[in-house]
Image (cartoon, rainbow, N blue to C red; front, side, top):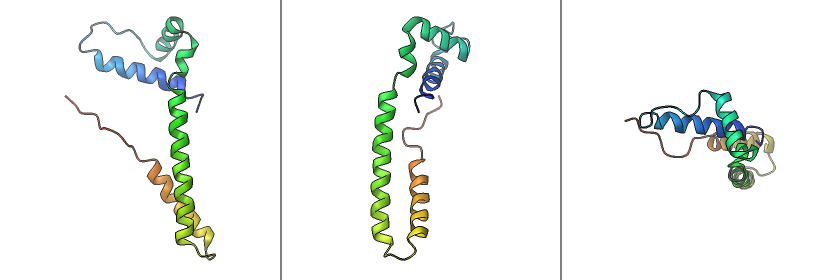
Length: 109
């Protein structure tokens, strides 16, 4: 996760700039590498890991919820028979649920 945060920071900055481009004439960044260089030059290397704490906290809560739901599902669905099959089905279901996008949809216009 920590290795991907710098790329996410650059992506977010480029996306924010694209949305503002209609209101402010010249773009600040001219691509991914330029955004990376200017961000480090202006704010230091620490800027590349901005938001890491939030991402780790979110992953901690999400994984804890999945683990708890898995344990509850095993107790509900399994009575010492076919535990492995039930575990696989439960894990697959929880994996699908946890990968669903949650949040507001972007509106065009």
